[in-house]
Length: 492
Image (cartoon, rainbow, N blue to C red; front, side, top):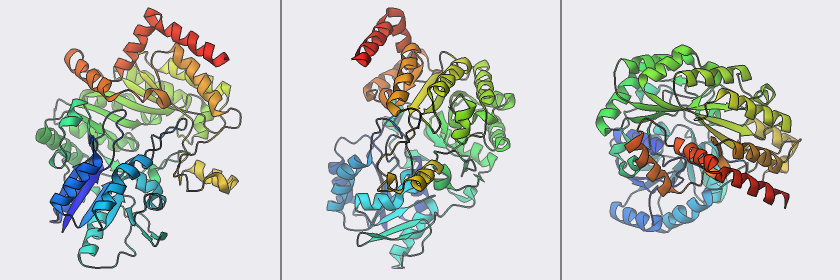
């Protein structure tokens, strides 16, 4: 049984993402003795041509397609990515291959059934992919009915006939070791200093109003053994020579005790690593944690503050306060760990006053060299508490279960007003980064910036170039000119 796995992700911001999830699926299939190849289309200049060459040469019997993103997750000026995936990858693939095509990935965990209809495909796997894909392949290989397979969504005669609950791996320690470099050519990714991904757990017990992590990974934490995590990191470092690694847990530091166990086990390895993490929760940041992060080589972190106002934190379903946001920022700043602050503005209950309070709070808590990454508006996703509430209030607010982008509109402000107030702060603060307009940095600029930093400031995150450029503009008067032009066009 020959299986072709395809990485369909071509979205490259904030950097090209190494397809870790697809590599996990590849390792699971390989451990069962299946013959497989992986086609990475991230840097492809002609997807149809690359697909044709791979399919004709390998002659697979099953194709698995990883689709990472539905869109760019922006609530304002949302970039819908599935249309390009459909036209550039799915349509050419279907013209070449008549066998079973199964899709998976984070986006499928949210809208598996709707994606099958949109892409005109028959099979999707929601949730953890390792065990589900192995069982899917086994059943096809043995001509066993697919109905009832956990995690599988089945579409037949243009109708969804089954949408089974996700098959979640109960013991993550039983999964095989994953080295993406075995399946993917990492050369291009290294040019952008893309990190290798590490998971210490799956699942999320938090109840954020906009989030879908617990829909994708489950409501309970499934923890990996701390020593096994440290051993995997050491082996990855030895096997690939890559020291830049990113922890991609939904929330890195919850449960806090487990997080510290991982860092203590890793510290004993005495490796020279360049670490970062997404999903740092401000409510579970203490001095011991930050010290452990510093000692292990954390060069930057993503702090999911989302707001700097208690009223808005409550609206977003957060488990921490404004005071804890400030405390976390100060601790990280004192220890010299650069921070990308993530904000979501335009949530339920947002007003001009709450917006201004949020920006003032973050300016107080953050360093001038921290990046303030601001998402204007909440992109509503299926299964999130805010989506459920919107559908209850207005069943016609979406025709496809939020597959096509839908943004939440706060009652007191329009999204245009939220954008305008945010833009005014961004023009005054060089370290503000507006996700809906600044993410369009050309890829060659990112690559050049990465090269410059490697030569002159290897310890600095690439996003600090954005702040440096803005500061230069401020000193030279270009920033003032930009503000004048903005206000001129705004009045007109």
